[in-house]
Image (cartoon, rainbow, N blue to C red):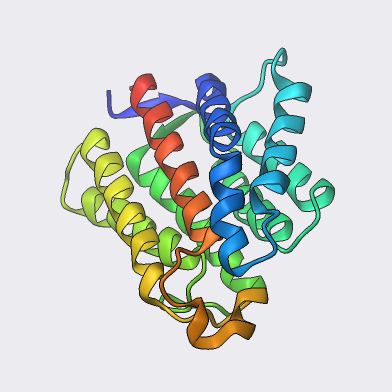
Length: 212
């Protein structure tokens, strides 16, 4: 199939929840190397709150993204809550009117999330943040769609781009957040936000793939 139904997208959201829950400790370890170590705990809190509230609810993909974004924005604290809240809520807004979500639609939703992020943070690719994961992932989906490739191929390319983006942060010096105070000492470690963003995009890709 070349689309999935927005109304059927709840399993994608639950895959994202499970991925964060399963990687809570790992994200804490990554963050603890150059940050304050609470990224896994905060993310797990927000995603688990979403699961508790909506596990039994009939909710669409975009409705769920919006609800999850609001929880992360308002209820988890830390710097990443507003960042992920903005990305997910802007993705939801870009797709809220859609009954079927094509690869072009999905690319537009991801791009809207990235645009929303750029409205609230100055970070660019190369600054050792989740932008290093999200930006190439957006580009990969758009390029696959423009080349006329199928949804499955676009999702695989998105995952590969996200993983490469995450890995690229290891050799960067942090320019933003608590880790930026470390200067050169921040080199040699993955960025926690880039890592969690890769986990979420991979879970999203797997969830959508199962709906196609």
